[in-house]
Length: 178
Image 1 (cartoon, helix red, strand yellow):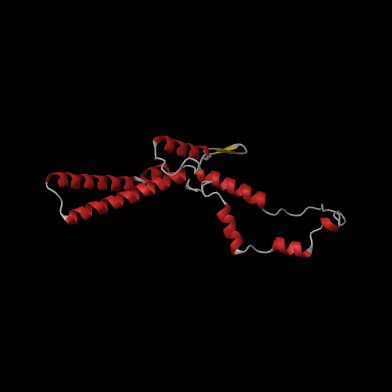
Image 2 (cartoon, rainbow, N blue to C red):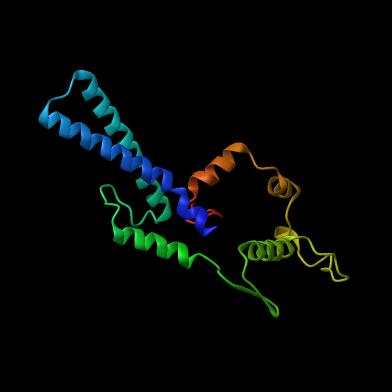
């Protein structure tokens, strides 16, 4: 997994290096001989492609870090990257005990955590215990109208309101990005 992650940005780094080399070659040619209008257009196109790569890198690090660290105009510095990588390490579970056994593999850890929360939030079989029918009275009872409102399916507007109300970079997903 680490090898895949290390190679993930390699193509982008190589593309950025090739763009910078091409721009430098055109700049050197502009200083010595001069450039034709088509060559100037080519140089501007290369700059645009490089700008897109820089924007994508900045967006990547903004997602890796926290919105508290990235303000408009902040540089993508080594300090910021160290903070972002520290957040990733802090939110990672490298080992997990499952009773007497120690889980090392990320897939085993994921399976264990998934099973734990599935069992935690699944309905358990009813036991012989129950509340007395007269436990609550009058105003304490949920009316039929309140029960209908509580058990009604979510509307699309309610779902979108909940999504818009969430912090967009609060919890990393399986790939480390929110």
